[in-house]
Amino acid sequence: MTRPCLLAALVLAPAFAATVAVPAIASTPDAPAASADGFSATVLGRYANDGSEVVAVAGDRMYVIDADARLDIVDISDPSQPMRERSVDLSTFGPSINSVAATDGRAAVVLPAAHKTDPGTLLLLNPAGKVLREVQVGANPDMVTFDEAGRRILVANEGEPVSYAPQDDAEGSVSVVDVRRMLARDPGAAATIDFRAFDEGGARHDELPAEVRVFGPGASVSEDLEPEYITVEGDRAWVSLQENNAIAELDLASLEVAAIRALAPVDHSADDAGFDASDRDGAIDIRPRPVFGLPMPDAIASFVVGGETYLVSANEGDSREDWPGYAEEIRVGAGGYVLDPTAFPDAATLKTNAELGRLTVTRASGDDDGDGDYDRIVAFGTRSASIWNASTSERVADTGDLFERTIAELSPADFNTNNDENAFDSRSDNKGPEPEAVAVGTLGDRTLAFVGLERQGGVMVLDVSVPAAPVLVTYLQTRDYAADPESGETDSGVEVLRFVAASDSPTGEPLLISANEVSSTVVIWQLAG
Image 1: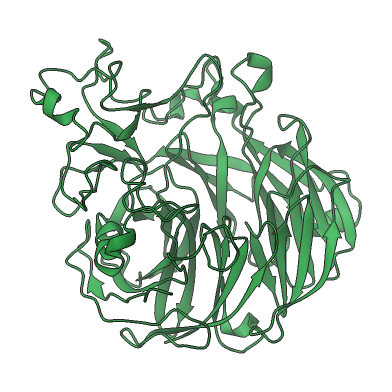
Image 2: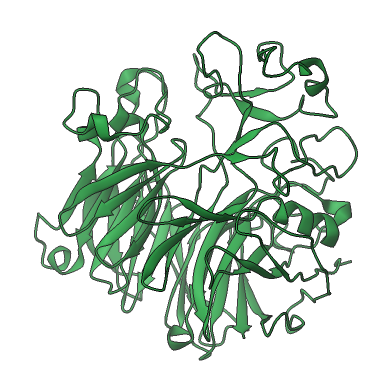
């Protein structure tokens, strides 16, 4: 049985969400969503393989990552019947494909090296999947994108370690590749923007805000910064530094870092910024808590309103890998997590499972006076999306508890479930629905942001035409909570979203493409409004 999905429409305050109102929508193919403030969405088709984690679209072709370093090239001239044209084996270039991007006439993929701290590879392909050129990029290339004109390719090289031994942590960087020069076999086609100037003793070290989290054992700043996701506007690009809770602004004309800016935490004790903190209370319990959430965004997207550039971030949150010798994650209830008695006179109560005892937090932040106990409780992610002024990284709006409240009203029996199981409340202790993916597009005179929820599944659609006052338009979901999420019979684990403008769409109407990591499925939505 497919449980119905629902739709919500409400106005957000500049900082946090309001009360949820809930009319119903359908979620099955060929059944359009009920109109929400003039917006509707129809599932046109689905595509499945063995590893649909990332997708890209150009014209009537869809490029989908598959398992074992294969790239599926899919004909979507009729999106209701996606047809695989071919599967291209790229395993001679690397063990897996981390990301794919596409523009008119070309596709780009990035592959890590067998030892991921070694340089990775960027491949440029024609629409049929023939490799045109290959260039070396930084370590563990995690995301690739074209600029709007298709003249440059940008790669976020995460450079994450394979252990905390000094020789096992690569530098994070961003590769900027001139497509014309790459096709001409110019050895200078690929430039690297690194962060070495911000290392201790470097020329720009004093510019690094103290709030940027640099704490990997034995790591320099350039080794510790881990680029995750890139968005581009003209000659400016922004890259999320997820574990560092920061965004770097890049000048693509000079190929330099313009600035690195820390992101302000969300105070979960504020009204409409609460969350459900326990997976052991058997209930939905969304309320303010004495916790600070670090945005730590995964995907970011940019848009322009009134001549000002804004960023929208999916505030997933992420911890350092648990290598021998250091583990960042800890639960509030753990004996080793000592709360400052002055800041938390009710510490014994907070450490119970019904309160904050089960909550997964960071041991790397919150001991503000360095005395060994925690003056602030700091959690990974904010369970929300934020809108930022791109020039200053000032937060102009945040969705607060909107996403959890919407899910609680629409799917109460499956609230805060995980993406690989159907279990009520199983993620409340750790990032909740977990916003992961984001895309931005325009419909008519409206700018819409689409935010994918990795654990819960589904996509929140926000009208961000007024950046300081977003409006929740609808919640799109095709996950069937009665089905095995790994079976391919439903859609679970939203990883990447792509908006396709009407002018670029095979149907002549705008599309939203959702790649789902756990179910290995891609959903094609047609949008109107």
